[in-house]
Image 1 (cartoon, rainbow, N blue to C red):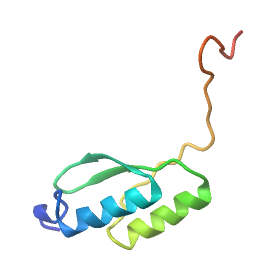
Image 2 (tube, rainbow, N blue to C red):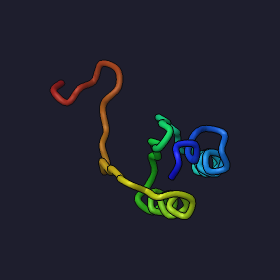
Image 3 (cartoon, helix red, strand yellow):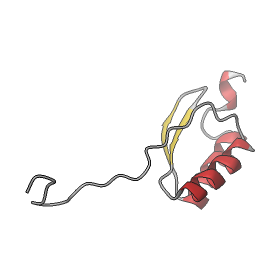
Image 4 (cartoon, rainbow, N blue to C red):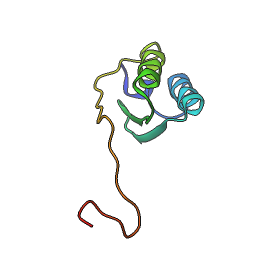
Length: 79
Protein backbone atom coordinates (compact mmCIF):
# COMPACT_ATOMS: atom_id res chain seq x y z
CA UNK A 1 0.00 0.00 0.00
CA UNK A 2 1.06 3.61 -0.43
CA UNK A 3 2.96 5.07 2.51
CA UNK A 4 0.06 7.31 3.50
CA UNK A 5 -2.40 4.38 3.75
CA UNK A 6 -1.34 3.31 7.25
CA UNK A 7 -0.22 6.64 8.62
CA UNK A 8 -2.11 7.85 11.73
CA UNK A 9 -5.53 9.41 11.34
CA UNK A 10 -6.37 7.63 8.11
CA UNK A 11 -9.49 5.51 7.82
CA UNK A 12 -7.44 2.36 8.43
CA UNK A 13 -5.82 3.87 11.53
CA UNK A 14 -9.23 4.73 12.94
CA UNK A 15 -10.45 1.18 12.24
CA UNK A 16 -7.45 -0.41 13.94
CA UNK A 17 -7.66 2.06 16.85
CA UNK A 18 -11.35 1.25 17.31
CA UNK A 19 -10.62 -2.50 17.37
CA UNK A 20 -7.86 -1.90 19.93
CA UNK A 21 -10.28 0.11 22.06
CA UNK A 22 -12.97 -2.58 21.85
CA UNK A 23 -10.59 -5.45 22.65
CA UNK A 24 -8.45 -3.42 25.08
CA UNK A 25 -5.37 -3.97 22.93
CA UNK A 26 -2.49 -1.51 22.59
CA UNK A 27 -0.83 0.10 19.61
CA UNK A 28 2.83 -0.29 20.57
CA UNK A 29 4.46 1.27 17.51
CA UNK A 30 3.46 2.86 14.21
CA UNK A 31 5.49 3.33 11.06
CA UNK A 32 4.19 4.58 7.73
CA UNK A 33 3.79 0.95 6.63
CA UNK A 34 3.28 -1.14 9.80
CA UNK A 35 1.51 -1.17 13.13
CA UNK A 36 2.71 -3.23 16.07
CA UNK A 37 -0.18 -4.20 18.33
CA UNK A 38 -0.16 -5.93 21.71
CA UNK A 39 -3.07 -7.96 22.97
CA UNK A 40 -2.96 -10.09 26.10
CA UNK A 41 -5.84 -12.47 26.74
CA UNK A 42 -6.94 -16.08 26.36
CA UNK A 43 -6.19 -18.00 23.14
CA UNK A 44 -9.85 -17.75 22.18
CA UNK A 45 -9.88 -13.95 22.56
CA UNK A 46 -6.55 -13.60 20.73
CA UNK A 47 -8.03 -15.56 17.83
CA UNK A 48 -11.10 -13.28 17.83
CA UNK A 49 -8.87 -10.18 17.84
CA UNK A 50 -6.68 -11.51 15.01
CA UNK A 51 -9.77 -12.34 12.94
CA UNK A 52 -11.17 -8.84 13.45
CA UNK A 53 -7.85 -7.15 12.60
CA UNK A 54 -7.25 -9.35 9.55
CA UNK A 55 -10.61 -8.21 8.16
CA UNK A 56 -9.22 -4.64 8.15
CA UNK A 57 -5.55 -5.15 7.24
CA UNK A 58 -2.97 -7.80 6.39
CA UNK A 59 -1.55 -9.48 9.51
CA UNK A 60 2.11 -10.05 8.69
CA UNK A 61 3.33 -11.72 11.87
CA UNK A 62 2.05 -12.88 15.25
CA UNK A 63 3.93 -13.92 18.39
CA UNK A 64 2.38 -15.89 21.22
CA UNK A 65 4.22 -16.50 24.47
CA UNK A 66 1.71 -18.76 26.18
CA UNK A 67 1.09 -18.69 29.89
CA UNK A 68 3.82 -17.05 31.96
CA UNK A 69 4.07 -15.55 35.41
CA UNK A 70 6.45 -13.77 37.72
CA UNK A 71 6.45 -13.23 41.46
CA UNK A 72 6.01 -9.74 42.83
CA UNK A 73 7.66 -8.10 45.80
CA UNK A 74 10.20 -10.00 47.91
CA UNK A 75 9.20 -13.45 46.66
CA UNK A 76 11.20 -15.26 44.01
CA UNK A 77 11.46 -18.71 42.52
CA UNK A 78 14.54 -19.40 44.66
CA UNK A 79 13.25 -18.39 48.12
